[in-house]
Length: 180
Image (cartoon, rainbow, N blue to C red; front, top):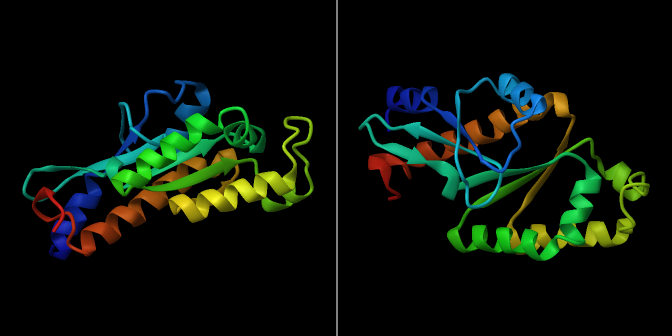
């Protein structure tokens, strides 16, 4: 892919927002900060991914390559590793089977909040159990965990997907709309 082809593909990047993401004011703000046009459609795993148009006119759907799963806080993350663990793990298992990389983006969180159990009023899941679950998912599913503030979530989503797509295209894996 030439530098001009790469520029063309990256400039056509459109965010995919999973239909299960609630259409709230916060979602609108997140999309504004993200700065990309977006479409809403079902994604098999995760809440966000992207598509782009290749120079040959074919569309590259990146949702089977990289997705971002967003959680609004550590309390929601605890539910995913607690009462909703079976559903959550099935989503990660499906992604692994397809070779999809998952970024887990947790708003309002930090390792300090986890280790200090500052989410205790939202969950009884002990920090040791939460850390063990996070580490197990990182090992089993090649999951990347990032924390951010809600005000920067849109920017983080943009930057992760942009960089992953750029690296993918530079490796030549997106030429002719198929993996080489």
